[in-house]
Length: 101
Image (cartoon, rainbow, N blue to C red; front, side):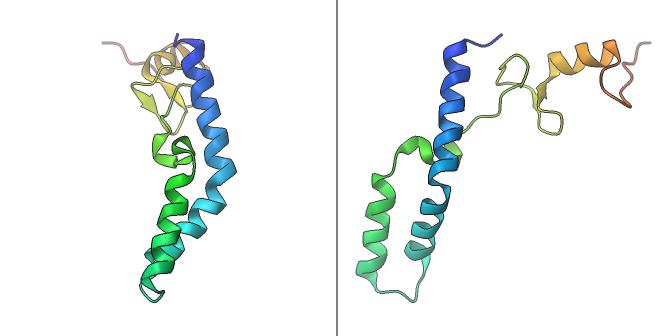
C-alpha cells in the first residue's frame, strides 16, 4: 500500500491538470504557430511558464486504483500486477484465468 500522502498528491496533480488543460492548450497553440509574430509567441511561452508546474500532464504518474502502487501498472485495468493476480485468483476479472503447471 502506498503512502496516503503520495496518493493524495497525485489526486491534487490530476485536479490541476484538468483545471488548466484548456489554458495550456491555447498557449501552446499560440507558442508553436510559426505564422504569428515572434513577440507574441514569446509572450505565450512566458505565460505558459507562469502556470503551476503540476498542471502539466507529464507530471502525472499512473497508480493502482486499489493500492496506490506506482510500479507494474496495467493501464487497461488500472491496477498493479499484484492486484491483478489477486483479483484473477478470486475470479473477479472476466476472462482471466491464472495459469498453473
